[in-house]
Structures are given as C-alpha cells and as structure tokens.
Length: 220
Image (cartoon, rainbow, N blue to C red):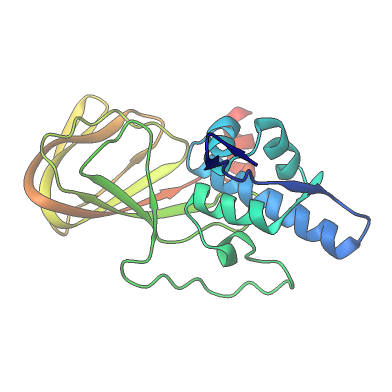
C-alpha cells in the first residue's frame, strides 16, 4: 500500500503459538530473554514496543510466551534491545551452559537512565538464569561537563579504577580514586561520580545482587 507516493513501513508481527512443543518452548525462551533484557536496561513495555514497531499489549503477550514471534519481529526486537539474534536465542536447544567470552570492545553498550553523553557502560556478561546474580560493567567517562545523577540499586557494588582519576560520592562521603584503587559499597545508598579529575576514566563496576536466602534473612 502507498500513501502520497510513499511506501508505508512494515510493522513487526507475532503469530499465535501452536501446540508444537518445540515451537512453544522457543516462544517461551524468547519471551523470557526479551523480558530479562528489557528490565536489565530499565525499559518499559511501551518503550521497547515503540522501538520494535509492535504494540505494548502484543509485547506483553510475547514475553509471557502466549505468542510465537515471527522472524520479522525477532529482527525488530534485536534492534530494539541492542543484541544479536544468537544472544536472544541463547540457551535454546540444550541444557549446556558454556562459558561466556566477550572480546575487547564487544560488550553490549548499555544506557543507564539519568546519564547522557560521555558516560558509557559496556556489559561484560549476561545473566542466563531466572534471577540476576551479578552484572560486570566496563565504565568509560570522557566528558567533564556530564552531570551525574545519584544511582541506587539492590546488592553490593565493587569499583576498580583502571585509568584516570575521579572523586566518587557515596552517601555523604567523597572518595578520591586513582588507578589501582577499589571501592565497595551497598547499592541502596545514593552514589555516583562527583568530580572527574583526569580523563579518560575507565573503571570496572561489578554489581552483586542478593540471593533469595539473603533477602529472606534480611526481611525476617
């Protein structure tokens, strides 16, 4: 169909899931992977749906495994989530759990809410289980004009400075950090870079999330 001489862009589609057990399993696997990646990036159903060209309701049904995505939808979702098709289908076709190798410069770039230019996160491993156990990031800071928000999240965070120097804020305290320095703290306390002394800055950030047992003990 055309309108005004221009071809309308094709919209991504999903097809109803059949009774085929293999197809159903694949649909559930893709749905779980999409939800895990979406929540890891802090994105809503509407945001990912808009990027992929599918409705919020359809994306919700896809995440729960009620519909089997078409190849067109899979391609649209990989673009919307910034992953490859193999990453989206990772784990399907067997129970093997091989090691994850991320070569230099190939980590998935993640945009954390509240950051703009000059603040880049590269995810160095993707968690494959039903719960996130940990997330390792290579963080690169290149712009002194960046205004940093206060981050808050569950678990414990470990920082190790690889290059550059900065002052890092944790609660009411400020810590000067240089290459080789490490800082460990509780993620629920507001934290983040305060001043950037020497650019570029590269640091390893590892967030370790609490286990179900630890959470139950904390709530008891």
